[in-house]
Image (cartoon, rainbow, N blue to C red; front, side, top):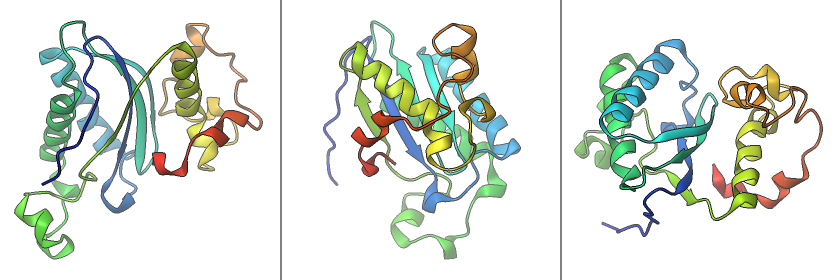
Length: 184
C-alpha cells in the first residue's frame, strides 16, 4: 500500500478537493447535504478547524480550511467526516455487485472517491488564487452563468464580508488557465 507524502503544518491553510465515487451526482441532494453538514459540525466540535471557503458541486467539492495552531491532522478529520456521512446516508450505498473486490474488502459504500487532493496554501497570492478558483467553479462547470447564482458556496458569505463584490466572476477569469485539469 502506498504511503502518500502530504504536508502537515500546524496552523496552516489547506485547499482540498474531494470527489464522489465514479462522479455520482449526489453531493447537492438535500439528504446528503444535511448528513454531510452534520458530520462536519460533529468533527469540527471534536477536532476544531476553520472553514474559510467552500463550494459544493453535484460530484465534487473544493474548500479551504485553516488548521488550529496545535494540530495539522486534516486526514483524520476527512476520514471521520466521510465515515459519519456514509453511515448517515445508507440509501446512497451501492450494492457489492456495483463495487469492485478491493472496495468491498475495504467496506466502502460507493459514496466517496478513496483519496482526496490537498494543497498547503503558501502565501497570500496562492490563497487568493484558490479562493477565486473555488468560487468560480460553478461557472467553470457550466452550472450557472453568475457566481452569485450558485447556492452551495461560501461566495455569499465572502460578499457580506467584503472580500468579493456581488457581480464578481461574471465574465472570463484568466487565472483558471493556471490550474491543471488534474485538480478534480
